[in-house]
Image 1 (spheres, rainbow, N blue to C red):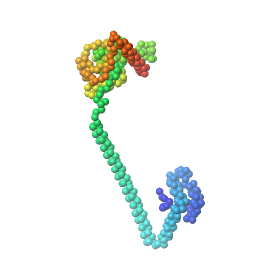
Image 2: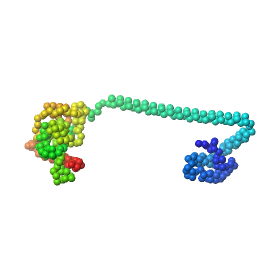
Image 3: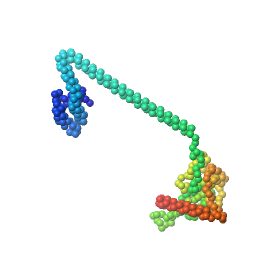
Length: 359
């Protein structure tokens, strides 16, 4: 874009002479700006540039110092033009050729400076990118070295604690396929091949369909607490398997996910994610007080030989107090109340889940 100092003559642009006053400049600008304003020339794509050049010329003429320099330049140019008119054709051609060479030299110099600046910027950009990549590699190597030298975390080595619900599984089945599974005793007998069960703590819930509340229930949900987590694991792995007597019965963990202790055993390589085919085992006695195991069933007693024969040191839950001991009636009563509260909580959980599923 042309600048008012060089290619554009501000006086000619505003239609003024060198002898004009400041008031003449303001009046000429006001009149000319109306003609070239972009709002009045929406169809002219060059209107914004023209208005900008006009504004620059107006500001230049109102600046006394800049106007003085411009006047001197214009007078020198006018004197040069007058001298040029007095030259013969040969000298005119020489002057014209000289001026063209000067313009070409200036243009080449400007282009060279522009190219050098562009190359310098590109070089700096490449340097910055290389510096950034080098820092990223150094940081990555430093991080890997720190991870390699970092001692294994104790949390990853220590076995997680055994939650009271880790030995409890959730069963879901259709009553039409298993009409006899409506009592804790029947469920305990079905699951007895897997291990000892706390029969008294079994919770069964069956609810009629919402659309037909007068009809008998179609589905049932049960919470079955095993005494050994290995037995609970075996029952969950046998979910839906007819050869284990679980055809049409969906077995899962009451917490909705695998207990932390089993995840830890698999991570440590002490428990196979896919247990081998089951082996027969005798039916253990399902009665007696519920105790949280310190050890899993032995290889001869477990239907899954992949389950470890013993757990690492785990905090054991206190067993239910044995009856007939003088002085412990209050403790036994407290434990019985806690157990009843836990059973009621599990029943509420089943009812809430059935209501959410729309069973």
